[in-house]
Length: 287
Length: 321
Image 1 (spheres, rainbow over the protein chains, first blue to last red):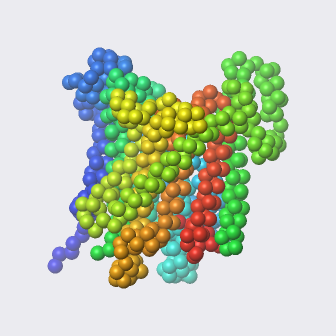
Image 2: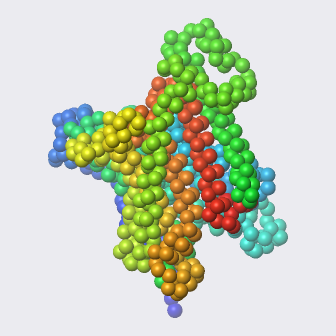
Image 3: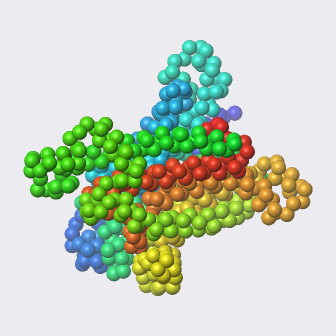
């Protein structure tokens, strides 16, 4: 008898087959990320070159999605913009993931005064409406990519900590954790060896949702002129600049908007699918 | 009595939260690039004038004393004077409040009125594969299109074909109700789509969870009519997550209003706060963020009271998930 060892690839294929919608989201997201990674080597044109075609020209060969007010090709510019959006939101979400998981685990396992203090601080962060926290940070630190990253991290942190803590609390009460404590496992060992692997599922689900919120917030801040500053551009700031010419050159706006919505949709679909897979008892219809 | 005690407990936590918020908001404005005196003087400050400004605004005093003075004035409704117009910030905000309040109320109402039935529909039909996928796709789509992208599409479409609504052209409701509704339709729809999706998704999930419970099977076995089951058994049990997600939407709405007010030239508080970031009118930003946080915290207390009213099991213990 052969022992069947399933590699990550067959797991992935299985996921795509079982849940078509989320599979489509995963494939779409992978495609967009690859497009951003390899964009500079694809024959899309130079995003910065001025006067590659006439100003505000309709789509044509050489500038497949038209040109902007300086005669720059729109197609490579929106690919660049998507890369900025992914990078800023992704960096922020990695920060949230690291700190949120750590803080949530410590709060859950330390309990008592430490837990209470952490959760009250989280409440304070949670009291700020998302975009307004971003606006406050942009006002205090000046608009720019760093402010946007900090804003997204602080906006997504409270929910992250709450979810990790809630899951960790239920895990910490299980008998194998108590057994580990009895056999002398210290604070760090319990947290890292016994709790962390069991909250990872919840962490991954929250990461995808945080990424989608992060992309929304980043593009909204940039649309308001409080995110990335010229000469850098993200999809939000491209839409901000393009909407000036909305009626005469709609190609400056709609491809960027469509790309942004598609990217966020792919992240959301993936998140839904992961949630259904990791937490299969939720949201199942009666058969 | 149980509900009252529960709300009182939440109220004290909320006050503590707002205290923390006020410290952050106060401190954030101290971080302003160049310092506050640069904002007042512009690029022409000399060391002497800078010192004079610092003395005038009390910036030379210890931070703690500044904070106590500021908090004292703020709780009395004195948010200082706008540096751009020279008017009290509170008066400027009150003048812009009606538009934002109308926008928020109408968007929330529309989001609930559309989102809940849509969620129930996609919940009860999800035994069908196609309907299940459609329900998921609609929810994910609505939550994925950024407000400003949707708004841009609307502005484009409705500037070409008017179809009875106007892009911009805000008039106060009590001046000309009809023109007001015509101008507010697009902002309200744009803002509420995200809420519709959020509420649809949550309603769908909780309907799915409730319908797999045994008391629903029992109701079906008793021969109750499906509409009665949905109203009497499913919706009541599913309503707590719906209340939660509505408060989440309200928090989002306070930010989304910024974008919508700017796009459709609605003279509200939200867009005023953003313009004040550009004008470096930091007292307005401070007041706006503080007010928004106070509003959101109050809404959460209200939601807690509603939970306790809907579900007799809630009260006393903390809500954690």
